[in-house]
Image 1 (cartoon, rainbow, N blue to C red):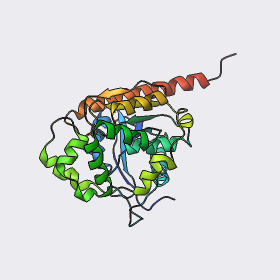
Image 2 (cartoon, one colour):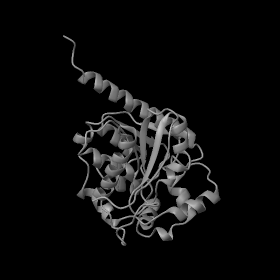
Image 3 (cartoon, rainbow, N blue to C red):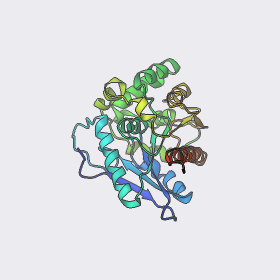
Amino acid sequence: MGISKLELVYRKAKQHDAVPVLFVHGIFCGAWVWEEHFLDWFAEHGYHAYAVSLRGHGRSSAPDPMGQYSLNDYVQDLKDTIQTIEMSHKQPPILIGHSMGGMVVQRFLSKHIYRGAVLISSIPPQGMMPLSWQSFWQDPLITMEMTQTYLMPELATTEQLRRYLFAGPVEQEKLDAWLEYLVPESQRLLWDMSWHNLPNPFEVAKTPIAVVGALHDRLVPKVIVTMTAATYSCKPHWIDSGHGVMLEHNWQEAAQVVAAALTEVLLSEQDESLMQEPVPA
């Protein structure tokens, strides 16, 4: 069931018929992570750029006082947002999901053959379990700290935020501001993304998919990104950054890599359209 209010921020391209793109945020965050840099950049480069805050995040409604939202709840938010954008532009947006947002996109694509999607540092279709084991093996301290942050984000520090999300320099003032934006995440969601409600990769693969990873990501390491790309039979694009690609000091490089992935998806969409056209007699 939809909710009364979803925050949807956007920047429109100069071209009326530009392709719309919809950015979907990860755990703890909201549309603000994309509004910082990416929305303006993508609008300037010819896309109608949108970002949604899922329920309980940003300025969207929070109908459950305990914040226990399911993966299907977030998928419903995504569907409602897509419908709004389609009504405005007479075409569906390309979906761009980061981290948890990538899982929301994949779960949506399990039930809908769509025009295209880009998964950035996404939770893999196999769910949280392989990611958790890989992260623990790679850096057990970060994994335990992140688990605590998931359950009690009010205890997080800016130094932890720096370690989790960034590989390059980041200003303390920005860390202080971003920490204030974080919200508690649903434990029910964690269950869904671990094994209860995983996407169907065979259905998702019917949609053109591009996969993007970050070379210095401590939360979704390279091996997980490579596994996701292999699942969808594509080669990953790489950004020289940490997990928070859209907020890193080199965010412009990240935007360029994501734009290249978008181009790949759009070309795949065009190829499929040509294949479906009838052969002249």
